[in-house]
Structures are given as structure tokens and as C-alpha cells.
Image (cartoon, rainbow, N blue to C red; front, side):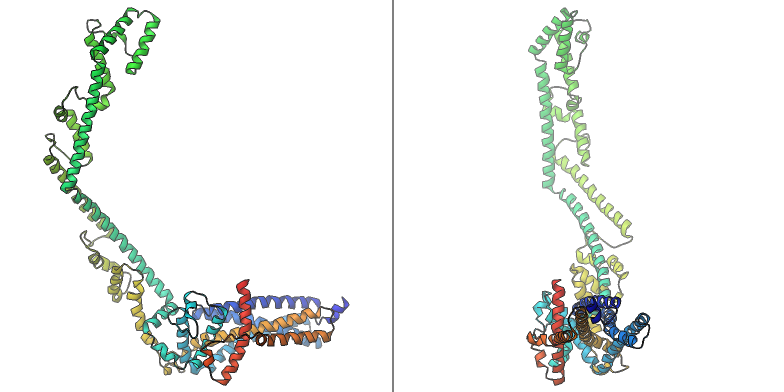
Length: 595
């Protein structure tokens, strides 16, 4: 324990606070480095997002710088015998704010130094995000298949972060970009600078398209109903309905005949004789309980209910065969009343059809289908066709009236007609007026054209893109437009930040991480039993290892056809430094990808 205390350069509480803070910082900075690398090479990076990244990145890096300085401040305060805790807290805050403001000043300085590159930065950014949005392709720089399949690896993202190198590798890049077509640049502008407005306008178009489609479907449903009724006026359809009607009559007559047959069978001489014999026997022994019981059972079995014995006797109180036949016939009629109605027995086909009971039944059945026939209806096809057509015509007129009534009730005054085709419908005054309420007058014709196509994708092609192409004409700036105080100097400064700050921020981040890793390693060594000579040797060894590892591993993150075309000697030195940094960026990203 005494050996541990001798090696420690700070009080144990301060040692723990610094160590935990450094480890926490390394974790946060490592994640943020990966996050920045990913976001700055995403297709939809905006200026607002970039500003937020800078702000947060500077705060995190300022914390890292403060943690590097804290041990030095401790020794200074200790030497001058100043209150260590209070002094460290105050000086840490001061160091943090100085580091934070220093990074902000550094960014402004980068912008100031490179202000002559505003023009170049503006167009390289357009090109960079054109590649990321799969609008432009530049396979000698980034394989376009990786953009299409969204399979960019860490090295690709590092190259894209340092895309300013293209200015030195391809002198004609900007002129090539201007010649690639205004529509492609306009497409990129939509994705980067007009996404919110585009989505808002597209939602209006989509909603209009859905409303119009709903109204058109309603129109077609009404057309179909009327068409169905019109088809009923066709002689083939009427003939089919007539045959169905006649077959139904025949089936009813067949049922009627079956009922007649049952009555005939139940009132045959044999059955009546048997009934007469059984009843005569009953009346002879009716005083006996057994006879009464057998009678009751027979009545229920034959007729379904008990019949008073006196009913079988005629008006003269005699048991006769004629009266027995009458009672049996009446019972069968009552039992089959629902099926037979008031039809008499023994009707021929013609008598059955022209009987009042049958005619009333037929009139009721046809009325259910809205076919109204007079009592004099003679069952002929000619008459059936006549009344059927009257029914169908009424339905068609009713459908027309119902459609226009509901349409006017729902839409108000309008010029929508059932006989319109889709083009006439889209270009009707009602649709035009509805569209005018939602979009500027100059867009109406294109809107109607896009709606007529029935393709939502045509919103961009027909409506939005042509407007943006006009705007792109205004975006094709000249070099003098980017001079101080010129119309787009601010856009140029924003472009410089987008182009030059990400590699700067990532480099500062990696260096801060590595320096804090070295100090954490040194702090951990200080709690071992090793002597100072060994500890110092291990520190130097770690520093040399970090410096030389990228070279020993033969890593080349900038092994790229376009980057190799850079001939500037000073820039090549910078590329070597970027390559060294990118090795640790790669390792950091791989760690987070596998985490």
C-alpha cells in the first residue's frame, strides 16, 4: 500500500475522479467519432444537423482537452500551495470554455483561410451529396454499387469525408458537374434543401389524388348500378327472368297436386270405411276407459290433436261416411292451410293459374322485385316483358335521381356527370376549383396532368421538378458570386464548413482519444509496484506503438485512383497524416459495428 501511495502523483480521491472521467470521456468521444463519420456521409445531412454536430463535438472535445490539462493544473496549484479542490473546479471550467471557444475560433479560421474556395466547396458539396443520393456516380472515387445497395464501408466513408481532395485530383470536376444536367442537380436540391416543402406539397397531391379517386370510384359504382339495370332491359335477361317466373308457377302447381293427392288418398273409400268402422266401434264401447284412451291416441296420431267424438256425428246426430269424409278433408285442409291457402281441390293447370288466390300470390311475389302487374295479367311473355321494362326504367330513373341528389348534397353545386370519362372528370370545373383551393394557380395545369396519369410518382416529375429546375438556374453561381459581401458568400461559408470541418473534427477527436488513452495507461501504471524507470519506458513504448502501428500494419485508407492523382507535395504530406488518423477511425468504427 505504501508503494502504491509513493507512485501516485495525486490524492486517491482525485486519482479516481480523473481516471473515471477519462474512461467515460474516451467512451463518449469514441461513439461520437463513429456517429459523426456516419452522419456526415449520409444522404440527407442538412446544414442544421451539421451545426448541431459541430456544437456537440466541440463540447465533447473541450472536455477531453480539459481532462488532459487537469493533472498539470494540480501540480501547479500544489507547488504554490493553493486550495487544490476549489482551484481545480474553477480552472477546469475555465479550461473547458477556453478549449470550446478555441475550437469555435479554429472553425471560423478554417472558413476564413479557405474563403477563396467557397465556389469550389459549394459545387463539391453538391457533387458529394449527389453521389450519396445516387444521383451522380463517380466509380473511380466511390463504387456506385455500394451507394445503390447501401453497403458503404468505413474506408468509403472516410474518403467521402475528405472529398475536398477531389478538387486537387480532378481539376475539371466542377465543370463536369455543371454539364451533368440541371434535373439531377434539382433532384439533389429537393433532397437536401427542399425536403420539408416537397413532402408538404406531396402530401397535398396525395390527399387530392385519394379524394379524387374516391369520388371517381363512387361515380363508377353508380354507373355500374345503372348499367346492371340497363342490362335487365335486354331481351335475353327478360326471357331468363320470365322462364324463372313460369318455372316457379309450375313448381307451385306441382306442390298443389301433391296436396290434392294426399287428400284423395286420405279420403279414399277404403280409408273412409276403415274410419267408419273404428268410430262405430268406439261409440259402442265409449263408456269404457280403454276405448276412450285408444280413441284419444288415434286422434293425436292421425290429426295431431284431440277431436271431440261428437264432431264425427252429423246434424241428425248420426255417424255417416259422408260426414266422416268431410271432417277428414277439413282437418287436412287446416293442417296444410299455409301451403294450400284458400285454393279449392282438383284444379287443372289453367284453373290453378287464373284462380284469384294464385293471382294475388303472383302479384305479391313480383311486387317484391318491383314488377307491378294488373289483375288482368295473362302470364304471356309479351305482358311480362312490358311490365318488367317499366320496372327497370323506374329503377334507372331512380338511380340517376338518387346519384345526383346525393352528389349535390355532398359536394354542393358541381358539374360532375355520370357519362364523363376519366379525362373529362379530372378536367371538370369542380375538380379544378378543388385543386385551386390547395395550390398556386400556376401549378394547376401540371397538377391535373399528374392526377390524370394516376401515378403518384409523377408529382415529382410533372409538378415539383420543373419548378426546382428553374430554381437551379439561380443556383448555378459564378466564382465572383462567392466573394466577400456577394450574394452567396454565406452559402459558400456553409459549404466550406460542410467540406472541411468534418475531417478536422474527426482528426481532433481521434487525437484527443489517443492522448487520453495514453494518460489512462500512465495512471494505471502508477498504481502498480513497478519502478519509475520501467513505467517511463512503458509509456514511451505505448506512444511509439500508437505512432508506428498504422505503418507496420501496411494500412492505406487512401488507396484510391482519384486520390493518387493528387500531385501537390504539401497535400501529400497532409494525406499521409489523414491516412494515419483514418487507421484509428477505421478501428474505432469496426469496434462500434461489432459492438
